[in-house]
Image 1 (cartoon, helix red, strand yellow):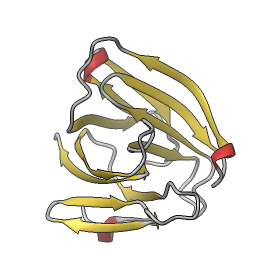
Image 2 (cartoon, rainbow, N blue to C red):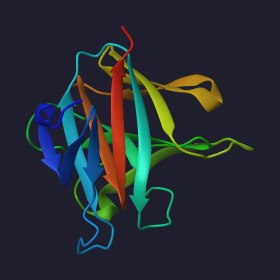
Image 3 (cartoon, rainbow, N blue to C red):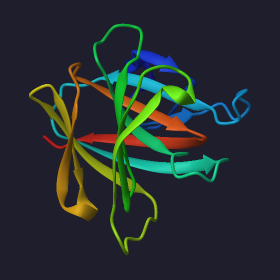
Image 4 (cartoon, rainbow, N blue to C red):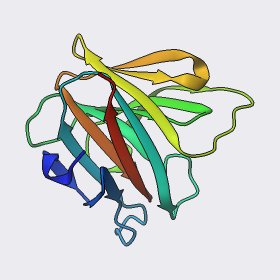
Length: 167
């Protein structure tokens, strides 16, 4: 992945070798800070490795999320999201920039799972949906994603994302 591939960016994006680093604004007025970027993608199988480099919030959402917007227009809202950690999965929708605009649709939790870093995601896109393999649950989760692009988001943290094509 390259920073010059990013289509729409909120926050700061840095290039780190073959990875991109999403830097949420630590000094944001809301005390959280976020970073959002969309990158072109051919939809073929992709393996992401995500490392959290820093976090200033203790909440579990202060981390990396995969997002999918309704179209490739400049406005990212509304967008659906999938927040996967080793033990927790959350699926929801963000309808605007305020915390009140976030709506959680479903949460699943696995018992007795080590939540250590780094995280790995296996992604593909077909039938207008983003498909993500959740290894700990041994299942694929799908998220409606009309635009074939890679949506990367983080809150209250700095994360490094490396992508490698599987084909």
